[in-house]
Image 1 (cartoon, rainbow, N blue to C red):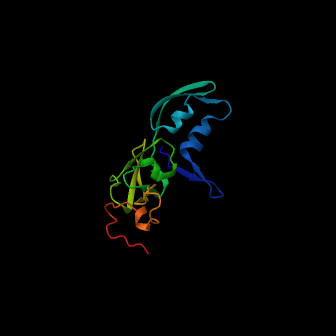
Image 2: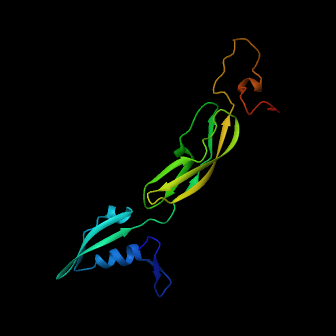
Image 3: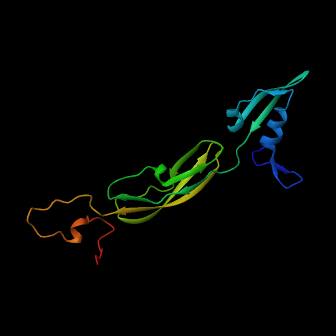
Length: 171
């Protein structure tokens, strides 16, 4: 039985076999099953003892995860030379199991401007999905120092001369 298996009732509502049939059936009055909530959510094979008075059965339960994680990408702004973690590019991760994140290709924080960033999400069942985000590396300086009594700084004085902004036009 996989997490995706389901039947529909008379009203068209989906009843998932993984949860609704197997575990709720065995959790009914007079029936006991010794699987923990953690085991019900974690892919693997488990030996379970089902007690249906007056009988006791030992069964093998295989929990599979066949649904890839989903999430939303986050657009990130950073200054030249700063870096961001892969977690900074993703929010609202939804999956039954734990999800690991990795850049499909490491962003280049040493080049100014826009970059598309792809984050690969992998859950405990080995299911993978991708989410797209945008990285903007800014050349705006966080501070400048001027001599007292000197002329008012030009707009260009607030910009760092970094790769990716060689032909910046200030209007």
